[in-house]
Image (cartoon, rainbow, N blue to C red; front, side, top):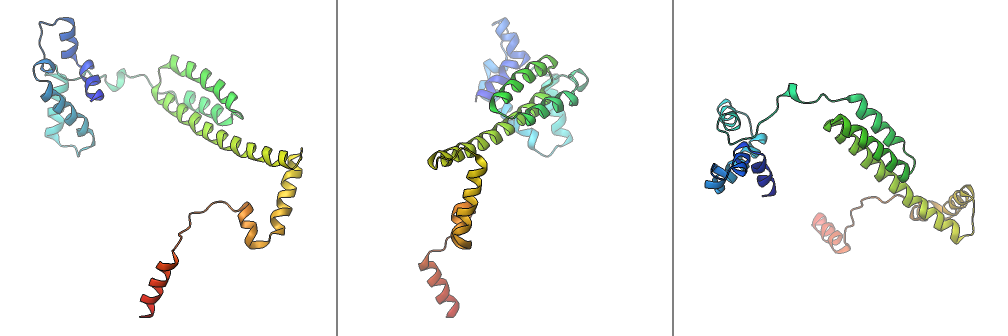
Length: 202
């Protein structure tokens, strides 16, 4: 419903009514019908296009004074691919959360001045992806620091060396418990296995 209200607030008819309450508009006289129509117009974007439907939507947007005034493609600011690529590259190269934050602040300011929404979305995605990578790496590093502290080890090389020797000493089966990455395994209960076996042998 909030999206419908936002669309209503941007419509020319509603703006005119807000300026002068004596000029009634369909949003005032028939709010329920206007809500339905707005939902249909939004859903239409995902429907198969037909000539008749295109003309009807065009009329509502341009001739009936009920729709939104859309800017033409030529009126929209051009997308600066180099701007988006440059700041996204800096985000991907950030080595710490703090460095990434600094890139975000600087890049946001530069992109805001260009008013390039496409560049903003690309930059934002790059920052979010890099943030997730850094947070994951930070979690692994914290676990390594804890392991080193438990064993009074100060050098990472020594910790990795000891982990390898310990895992190898466990043999091929038990070493998996130490260094094996989690996998999605299907666990079949014993009762189900027995039932399956009896069905196969019947």
